[in-house]
Image (cartoon, rainbow, N blue to C red; front, side, top):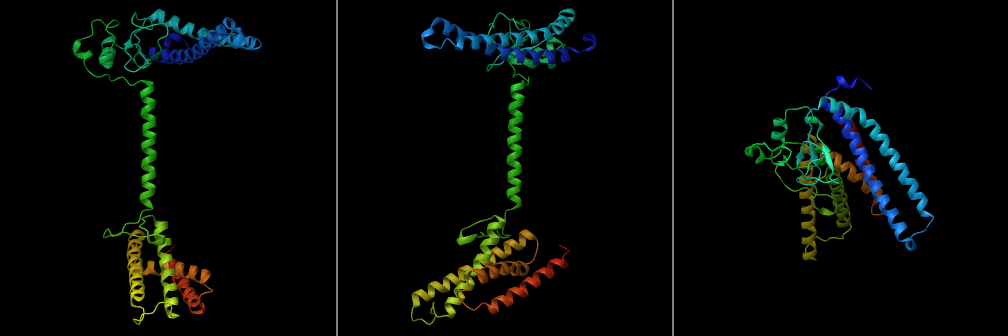
Length: 317
């Protein structure tokens, strides 16, 4: 241990505050064990006699741990006795007051405190000014009324921890929002964009996959129409109109998506159209081979892949 005479009041009291916290926690455990043991002795019919030795052993161990901490505290407290610097303590319950010692007449033996070593050795007027409305009027009887009426500026460990947790939550939320924003597609004119099944979506993955699926749907509709599945000659006017509307709707949504994707990636609509059609064609050729002869689509897909690779190489990607 370094020479106590060269250590600052804040340094010494910070160490003592740590010991106080450890000892308080152990004392609470000891009190609970002793109460339980007393109940065992008082009402033996509710307990097993074999439990008593283990409780007694636990109590002995807790007492030894407390005594070990007290041994560490003694030289530090002796240095305080020698120098008698100012101290400040705050009761840990809500609205707890700031006291100059741990034995104020307004508190109890069971009162729990948080040490405020950042104020150790400071002028008492400075401590009272920081405590504000939380200053104990018994400990600080000369505190000005103007000071006692203002909010406290003391940052307790509990508040600091709460603030730190809140800051972490806010940071995590900001990072999550930033990640979401980085993947969010926006049409330059504010038009809605669409994912799979035609639902509105703004995630880059959803909009891209939705666009590729639109290509698949357009190809499937064209194949069905080619085979006479959707007549456009007026013989089934209502159904034909429904299919025309579906075709126009798909084309419009796909165009909107392509414009949004071009805006997101900083490319042209034609480039996005080629990339999306490649994805859609690949899916159509794979999943709809039973539907039609894929020779022409396979040739188009091959050409599109080469075109997109060449464009990517030219861009240096």
